[in-house]
Length: 167
Image 1 (cartoon, one colour):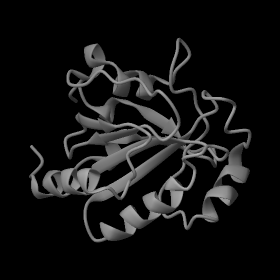
Image 2 (tube, one colour; image 1 turned 135 degrees about the vertical axis):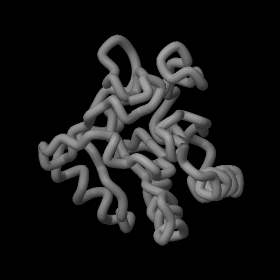
Image 3 (cartoon, one colour; image 1 turned 60 degrees about the horizontal axis):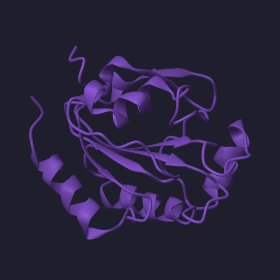
Image 4 (cartoon, one colour; image 1 turned 120 degrees about the horizontal axis):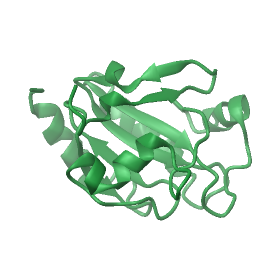
């Protein structure tokens, strides 16, 4: 397994089950840290719209709630899922984690640090920071919170990655 891919990590779902990121191999991923009380929270609807747009493709959105920025995720567990359902959620939401600092979840340390992932250096600056991962599990791009999920910039990048064949 390539150490520069996300496939070496295991993450926890809201129901407590653990899932290996290798389960998403050969898929293009958009990994996002979310929060229910953020000014960018309406992006949950846009994430659901983006997921619908690529529903018949090998594309997935993975959402990781975080309370790291301004205490904007006070909810826990199933309350997070219930809140996200108000926005038509159609993608996996994982257990609330830390996404920056010394206690950051290993996946987010990897996503944010070029020394780890070999490609990018971009720590989340706020909620709804987005990482784009190719079919091989490599971090290939990131988008700041103010970039809407349905922007042409993100959509075109996803289309290009979907057109590429996994190695």
